[in-house]
Length: 124
Image (tube, rainbow, N blue to C red):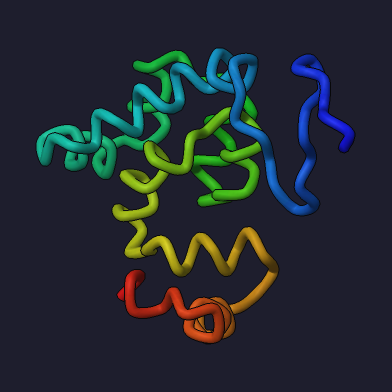
């Protein structure tokens, strides 16, 4: 049996690994998304999205992805799906919508896939 050296990273096609370097890269973005737990912060963001991004020091690429609503770019820019869920909730998206985006499926196709795997009941 062959084992993977601890320094090698397992790559899963179509996924973006969220590891230490990605956490560092996405720190400001994830901190901003966490702030959306507070209703006042959600309203402040809606009132001035670009200014709100600037308050958290997002990189130009992160800010552009926020303003474009580009969830996949946000993942590439260090966004943690757990924090990005706070942002996507503002957009009216749920985890099945995000799963569809990540897999290149429509939301309905992704839900059908979950159901076919016996996991749809857990995901609403």
